[in-house]
Amino acid sequence: MKNIPFIIIAAGVITVAAGCRTNDDGFSATELQTINADGAIGIMRLCTVDNETDSLLLRTVSRPVTEKIFHSDEYGILAERMLATVRNPENEGVGIAAPQVGVLRRMIAVQRFDKEGEPFEIYVNPEITRYSETRQTGTEGCLSIPDIYGEVSRAADITLRYRDGKTFEEKCEEINGFTAVIFQHEVDHLDGKLFTDIMIPPAE
Ligand SMILES: [Zn+2]
Image 1 (tube, rainbow, N blue to C red):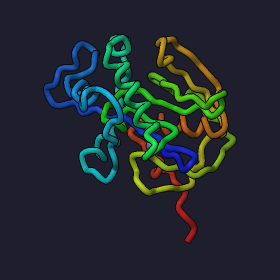
Image 2 (cartoon, rainbow, N blue to C red):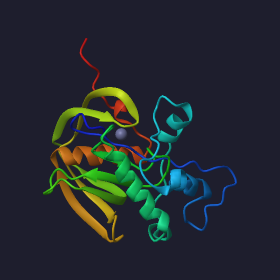
Image 3 (cartoon, rainbow, N blue to C red):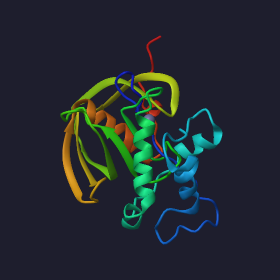
Image 4 (tube, protein in one colour):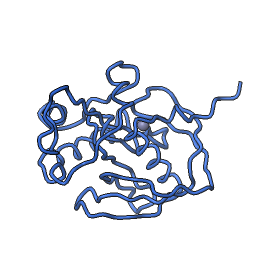
């Protein structure tokens, strides 16, 4: 999600080439190429809706992060590079999803505004298992949708189940407020959904 200064979310994208082996549930050759591009360090290229290939990728449902992937060197590289990308001072976000950097895997980074120091944390295979009926409306933007901002209504609090990005341990947590908005925006990316799909049309 884009920092508005409030929010930015990026998702990663993975292109699975036809006939490309998935490497026994590890990263595919195409995914490895994306993760290791530019010497495997630093900010990654963001997929944006104004690029035709990227826009199709952003509409694709991401696959789970397997245990084999979690234990690979490239998992750590991807996590570091997603963090570098969302924290880019020239294009800051408050959240990013792996499809936004071209890797179609269920992995997100979210800035925890509800924790001391507001750290960015990595969440693997996140799943929202409960959405409150109480809603909150706020302005959102997206690292993959340049120059568009709009009002979106989201659940005020959620229950999130996920694998810890550092230990792969299964966890469950209640999250509310703005941080819950970021999680909803980022998890949507993993299912090929964008905030503009549910944006409240501006009054004429
Ligand atoms: Zn986004």
